[in-house]
Amino acid sequence: MTDGATAKGEQTRELILSTALRLFREQGYGKTTMRAIANEAGVSVGNAYYYYGSKEHLMQAYYDLLQEQHREAVEPILAGERAFVPRLSGVLRAWLDVAAPYHEFAGTFFKTAADPRSPLSPFSADSQPARAASIDVFRQVVEGSDLKVPADLRAELPELLWLLQMGVVLFWVHDQSDDLRRTRTLIDRAVPLVDRLLRLTRIPGVRGVTTDLVGLIRSIKP
Image (cartoon, rainbow, N blue to C red; front, side, top):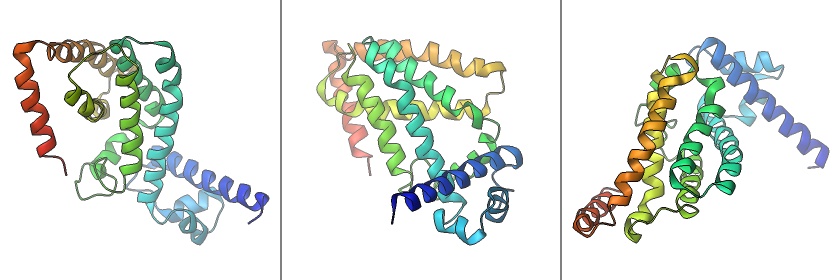
């Protein structure tokens, strides 16, 4: 395939995705069909299915796009800040900023993603690439910070922080406050608390509990 054909194909792919996301915002995820997406994008239905086999594939592409935008947004934070609290707060707040345009249809979409059998679940095998990329961001948060915790807990911490983000996302879905004020307050108040709890794990009397906690985490992993 020539470079021109490759570029045109990539433009078509991006057009279909951007059109789909716009229709999801305007009409809701459930009411938007692949035919409607193709018509709005000015491509044939067959062409739409060529690039994205289903609406679920479009949402997986959205996951990947959102994750890439988030990774780019956090680069200055991770490069310029070493203290754990502002690193983690900045990363969580950056996610709110890149996801803001899609907040309106998040509730409708969440009904599908909340089904553990859905490929759109953030815990599904289909979502693994985006999930792994997000966990890697939190690995960078930990590794470049001033946080000191036991080695076994440190190894599990990036995934635990990703689970914290999933809790923030769930709160965000239901947050109707102006400028997502309640979600931002949640981040600002919760992150220092997480920091204090993590630093307590270095106290000798807490070390045994930390070991038991890490053992529990590892025992229930798939």
